[in-house]
Amino acid sequence: MTMTMLADIAKKHAPGERVIKMNQVTAMDFIGVNPPWHGVVQGFWRSEDVLSLTIPGKIMMAFTMGTKAPEVPTDWVEKAKADIGGPRMEPLSRERVYDDYAFHRERFRSLIRSEEFGQNGFVNLITKREGMGSLLDQMGQSEGLFLHIYYDTNRVSFPVRVNELTFYQDMDDDEGIFTNYCIIRNVTDSFITADFIYTRDDKVWAIARGWANQRIGIANQLWQVVCKPQRNLLAVPLADNVFYAGYGGELPNRSSLAFLYLRYLTASERKVFDDRPIPEGQDDFIVGRIALKDGLRSMLKTSDFYLYPIEFDTRYDENGKPYVLWTDGRPMDPPLQVSLAHKNQKGAAIITDHPVGIDIECIEEKDPSFWDLAFTQDEQELLKAQPDPTYAAIQFWVAKEAYGKMLGTGLGGNPKSIVVTSIDGDDLSVGDQRIRTTEQDGHIIGWTM
Image (cartoon, rainbow, N blue to C red; front, side, top):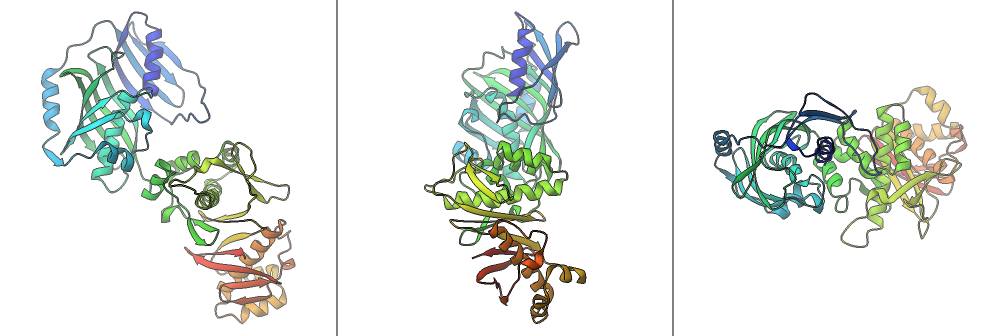
């Protein structure tokens, strides 16, 4: 999309000429368009026919403008086609490609049919769709498909560099059915690089050399939620109305987190996320929202598909207790009571129709001074009577936190004001209020019943 948009700008600055070549294309960052993005395009003429355009911090590239198409490198074309090699597997259907391996919506699904899955690439029939740049986007899609089919790790990729893209016919004459020859040239742990030949009616329309996608390590479960949230959840149920999220057992890198940020957080939530001073705080914030929103999506599912995470917005009342709205500001009907917690990139949430609280804490031995700070003398005696006092101490603390959240006040700086009066295995009591606990990934989660 961005390359095509900049090409339109280049043509406006060269009346009567067309784009002959794009080269030195370098993409530095995503351009998010929800909400709409606004930026400034900077440019200068490098020479009489070469225009350099840049969106600072996002992308830069050069355009060679002219009126006459270059001569097709026929020998190179024939050799490149042969480099695809013999068949490697039966081609996948269009439906399978887009349902299982791509996140593109219909307006960017330029693939018509795969003709050949070769040893070193593909031969596909493609056509322009409604989305701007959908025809050229098939280059990046092809490299991504190669990784998804033939590799087990770092299968997600995005275009970051193109050495040269030359048009042997008018770039704007892009209607009809094209054959896309994808020739994979190199695959490393970080990048996949290919050349592409687009032909129409057996005539070369464009050739791209050195189209590079950067490979990103992202767990398959995370990727499925990013691609098709209407079909997938990250959080899992622990009990009725209680949900836990731990990134599918694999901690996300910063690239993975960026996708979850866009998929799960509303504009107001993104502001809170951005204001968090350290990455760990950002990780915990988003995993808590994953637990809560996936819980809501699971409970409110009424058809074959889940609602999208960004259809829900979380806010806080004057006491810091979370509540949920629809993203457009409408209250939930009927009203829902929620509580959420996060720790060490793990999140938990509970959703009911009455006041509730939930907490999560790492299982670890506490300093003796913690006992005196957190527990009354009666609680300490009760703890000492347990088979594993260290484990029970975490249960007690979680129970206190969950109870305080249910009240909407928290611990109020005085943990001894909330007293655990009994414990029976995973069940604790604060007076008449029961708290259920469970162990998950080295942590104890507790919630009010």
